Length: 282
Image 1 (cartoon, helix red, strand yellow):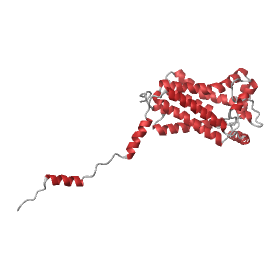
Image 2 (cartoon, one colour):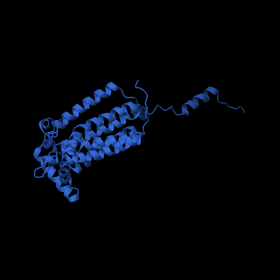
Image 3 (cartoon, one colour):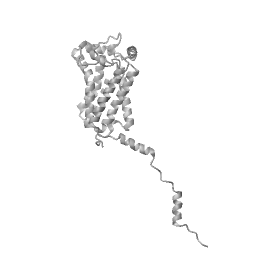
Image 4 (cartoon, helix red, strand yellow):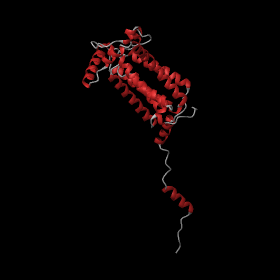
């Protein structure tokens, strides 16, 4: 009997037919790689950051001040907040406002604090991050920007009069009484700003962002202590000057929490856990 053998070329053709075709690179993998490139920390460009912050603040001011002031609704909401705080047992803003107003040098200092440090400290922290923590800068900046964006939505959906503008609240408008220069809360400059955008308080949202950033990233103990004291002092200032209720501060914290959540969702970790340094942009 003869033995039938399979030729080598026939075996090769048989193996090639049975073997599965080489899989193409999955689309999801390409998207994930592109997303990783977008999320990768990189050293920020100075010119871009200056333009971005300037344009963002201009848009923020434009939108905030363009929101219809809705005075009647804002006053009704203030009455509701004031009643809610009485129910909660935290409606002591009036007592704090009158007590601090009795110390002229203290309340005048608080008026200037309210009008200036809100911007000065926030910009200072951004500059410090840019110079010393470039790898964490973009993610931490995103927290601030998302917080501010959420606040704009709050101003539109829930107009709120500050305590100093309430009907029958007997609060003291400390800026008017002491004629503090440069504040947009009262006086001639009040016409340049929406006076019924008290909820949420961005003085609290921004100051807590500054405080947490300093506490998490600064090295000297005394600097971290100042960072922790800054939002606490800001809370006392906004209440003493009758610019906000306690619950406005809660609204600011909720917006900040959203900012942290969005930054975490995009970068996959908290901004303070990212590398301190980053390669320069291509």
